[in-house]
Image 1 (tube, helix red, strand yellow):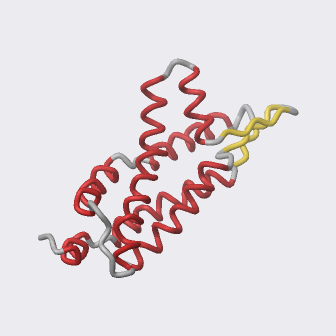
Image 2 (cartoon, rainbow, N blue to C red):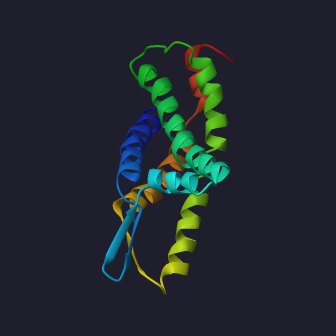
Length: 158
């Protein structure tokens, strides 16, 4: 349980970096344009791609954040020998949140875009894309380290 908690705490730090710092910067001549994940969602929304903007926001921002916060909500109190209120529904919902966590699909889209734009402009990776990439692996490690059977046993539900 301690490993899962540590991975979730590290994940929150990476999540903050991935969302606050630019994913990519594009240099066209003298112009340099940087884009964060939220700016990408807003650009999709502004272009009328409401469903796609919602899907990107849900799978790359909301679902990963809910996974991390749910893990912290369950595992932090258990680490200190306490039982958080309404823990059973949160543990059950963790699986649903993880199913919608599709950051790797978005990262693949970023890589395809970089390859396509590389001939027309200079693409500079930002700290956000590095944190985003690391967060994908960290969330996978947290999901692997999470022993839900041990959680159910600790809270007294089978």
